[in-house]
Image 1 (spheres, rainbow, N blue to C red):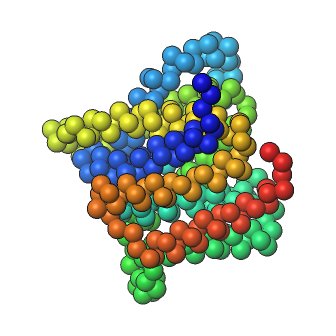
Image 2 (image 1 turned 60 degrees about the vertical axis):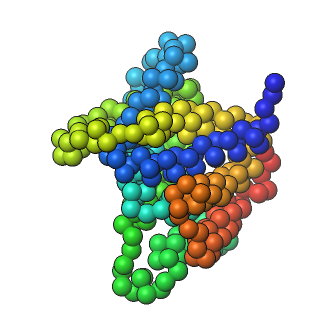
Image 3 (image 1 turned 120 degrees about the vertical axis):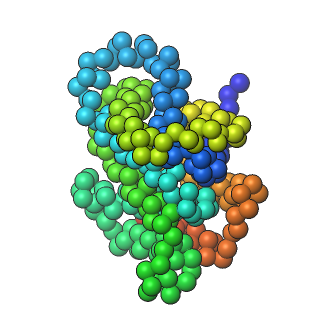
Length: 300
């Protein structure tokens, strides 16, 4: 039975939304570095058996591109997720998701420097709109906070997560086609785990392991969820959808993440959706659409 690519991408976005929602619950007990490491370790163990054939056929390319795996692991696997889990410890899942929606904007800015892509006036306007939306979310629609430099640390940490994710996409664009897609994903996870292990040891030494005694069923279920749904299944579903309907149409569905996370946050975490969320979200989404509008004439 063939599953609709639109359904696949909706499921992928829903699973990513669950990462923000359950991440806020889990990080109240599990330290962020530990949480990220356990997530990707599970993903590596689960995905490895499906890559044995590709490993045998591409072992030379794996050795030659180990630096690529480290860079992708640091930025996209460990860096992004550690900052996301750190952010939602202090800010709402709704705030984090809306700020995360600005990733294409930051990617476009980095592309100016690393990919030497030209920026049109229309794209510049889109970046300004999207950035205005990010600032509006961070100051909660109160300009006095901007003058007083009074910000929620979680929102600022989420900006770091977005920066790491944008850098991940740039590296992926530059060198991601050098190896088989499965090897790229598995190698990136392994690179992230190698880099993350000493950080995990430092975090465990600093914070201790008393948090283990506080674990409840929801935390164990969340860890299982992190390792399977937003990691492996979202990756497979999203890539399959992109192949069938194209990257432009697929990227539009990513905006549903704001909707899904808002519903989950309000229903289960008691978070509230304010007018500044709506204004900021509208500015970000429209800014991102304008920034990427140059691709609209490209046939998929």
